[in-house]
Length: 537
Image 1 (tube, one colour):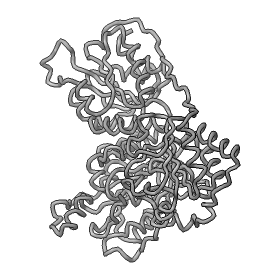
Image 2: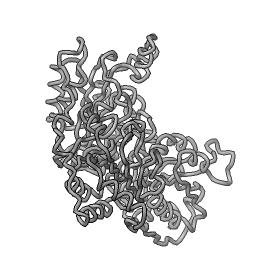
Image 3: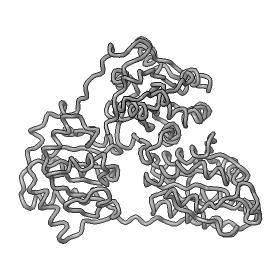
């Protein structure tokens, strides 16, 4: 077969059947073979970076390696932000990227693709020769799994029509579970936990497979449970869940965390938003459990650390507590969980004419949105309020594009997640600037692919974070203001249903449309830029 066929067959050899991409001369025949001969699903995007973000979300939610494909030169440079987001998210995916022919250095699209990829933090794999194509694809997939990051496989365009004998290569990714070591580190951690009077258990997304064991430890210690933002929803069903830990906590929960004397952190690198730049760790013993040594003390130096599996370690701690007959702390008995997790209700009468109150709109949306939703959010000043007020069924049904501080990535992630959970509606919250930057490119992709997607655009006609900075310094915010077109009309023009919300009556109509939707729905919330909640950072 030809090399392009061998590449497509290699994906089938790995049982990878969904690919996101934008075709060009270096990948179009491979994509064609993947679909027509291999029966795969190809999702054509409008912008190359979107393919990376969709594959990122699809891989994360489906629990497999995400696959994207682009051509060369400007196609790759259009992926730099998306690749950086993916690399910092530590999610395995492979980007099949074309490259110009080595024999044609004068090609207008020729760049040093290795160096371009390197700055993003992604891995780079060079397809060495036509006869090594299937091996190189398999090795890129292997690297993505073990390195937990995107890997860009560079495919020279002049290889594609070379004839080769296809050889099936699938390399197992060795994932032996970490264990809890014996020794001083373990003794120190157990001692701190056993002596704690007001312990709190904190879990990040790295502990998503150990929920039952961590909850059992919390019950044994009589300790409340909290999560990082990325693990939002992980302990929804537990009676002593105090929700997100850190700057996104309610004031009451923040105060309760301040009274704790020990934090037992599973599967988190203790980012400064989680610790409030270390303020929430003061006066406490901190025990960190993470199965990746580079994540331990990455952002905060704990008092004790175990490079170990979260579930095995939680079980091991329970065993030692039982052996020593350590009593429960009694901390949970002191806490009113309902009061600790309640956010102030929005005031429907607070908004000026032509606008709605954002907190009130979010409270209403929380009740009206489908309960089995998959929740995604873009970046921007609107999002912290969404994270606090809008729930998700579980940590595995939530994805926020927070790894690179960029706006304009949310809709692409929502589409990718939708292909991993086709039986669930996907809900995206984005801002006006984020939608103009990335959402407007791909909303029609959701329409074309017939996705069950609900997009809420918070439109204050401004770049909000910059607007606040101008106001805080008593400067004219005019340069941060924008006279955008109607997003509701854009949603309709792109093939979906758009609804403009400028009053509480309009909000009622939008909520009714959620129930009656039969295509991607876009709800535009018109907000007063001078009356938008500040970011909880």
